[in-house]
Amino acid sequence: MDAAEIAVRCCIAGGGPAGMMLGFLLARAGNPVLVLEKHADFLRDFRGDTIHPSTLEVMHELELLDEFLRRPHQEVKTLGAQIGDEFLQIADFRHLPTHCRFIAFMPQWDFLDFLAEQAKRYPGFQLRMEAEVRELIVEGERVTGVRATTRDGELEVSADLVVAADGRHSTVRERAGLDVIDLGAPMDVLWMRLSRRSDDPGQTLGRVDAGRIFVMLNRGEYWQCAFVIPKGGHDEICRRGLTALREEIAGLVPHFHDRVDELSDWSDVKLLSVAVDRLRVWHRPGLLCIGDAAHAMSPIGGVGINLAVQDAVAAANILAPSLLRGAVSEQDLRAVQRRREFPTRATQRLQVALQKRVIGRVLASSGKISPPLLLRLFGWMPFLRRLPARVIGLGFRPEHLSASASA
Image 1 (cartoon, rainbow, N blue to C red):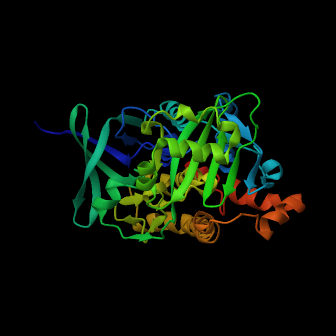
Image 2 (image 1 turned 120 degrees about the vertical axis):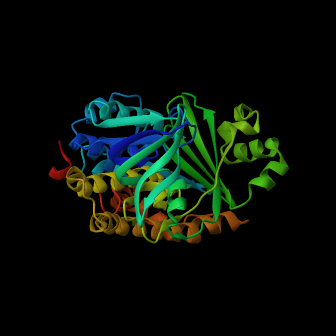
Image 3 (image 1 turned 90 degrees about the vertical axis):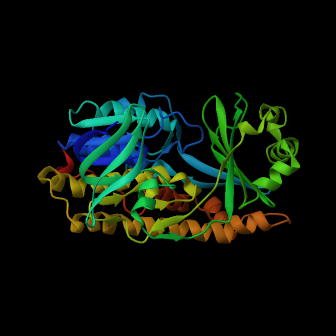
């Protein structure tokens, strides 16, 4: 049976934050765009749920902020950590020069559904679920489209530009043969959820003790929890058994002792294998990688979604006019990488330093933990908390919508 065929200006592989935001912005600027998402829906547990002030500012510029914030979410204005026996405030978002001076916790599927709803207002936007890109179509040196498997059969898409936004295990970047620089990570993360009660602390925070790091994200009715473990340590934790894991969590967070039994099966505990990497070159003729497909981030700071969104905004600003003319050049693609490479490198450099000097040392420690001097300074001098808030909340180069990417 012959494959169905379709032609668009831009074909985006992956319906995550980067792909959906770029598809929306390009369609809004008048470009025919097709987003291919391999899953049947956006409902997947333990994807990043933090919407940072930089992304909320983009929603304001789109005049969608009020509508967006009517969706159920929690607002976090400060971040703190329990380190050994001491509690310290680390970041205070209430002084950022943005309309929203907080992090919004919203399930990623709600965020993506919202973007899809807005994008579908534009006639040039198409979203196909259960459509997985398998191959690139290449003519000479230029990528000219993709072949995808869909629920209706094979699909062949011709496009002036293919964008890989299909995550850290990107099929598209693998097929394109792009060189990946692996920066390494000393940890993995076990994600889980535990019920939240009215007398629990209200703040999103982390708990750090000898050899253990546990992060609690307030999601209203429940805690979304991250248990940080040494890289490759998952098999050993499974060998010790679920009871031992429950006891360890209860030891770190005593008020969880009567609810850790909610973790009744290993299916309640999801492993995130942490990777920090980036492409040496994000593009080749006819193809651009953005978001995790271009740079996988550590979960430190929860900045991955927001860097992906910033990539999409920058790509739309630079590429929308060229796409309208049907002539995206290598110079255009290089311009996107130049624009986004500095914030990517700076963020990863900071994450790698924290992994080596803080997280790696904590996970290897067997003695009593106490806060380092820098974190004590955050406790003594509240104005210093504005610095990590700015790095986490805005990043190193927040993007804003340009006139070229507007309708």
